[in-house]
Image 1 (cartoon, helix red, strand yellow):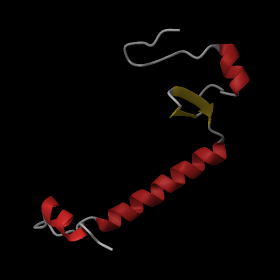
Image 2: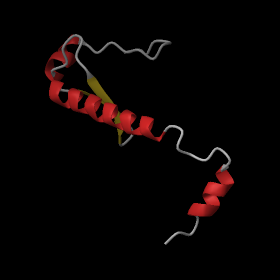
Image 3: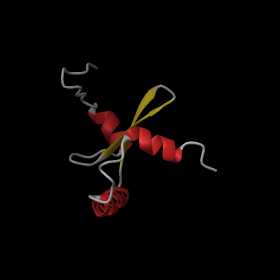
Length: 84
């Protein structure tokens, strides 16, 4: 098996079938002990991840414009250093 210049790999049909990876399905790719693991993501898990991301982005949007633009990175480090 060869990786294309774009980083693409074709998963052989028999492997896809055994893993339950169907055309246009979502897969999760992760590293585990130096190995690349590719596994199918069921619809509920995929929706759950999308919902979590949407909630996170909404919360992040609420913070927009709330910071002090005069506060630099060193100021933040000084304020947060050695907190107990």
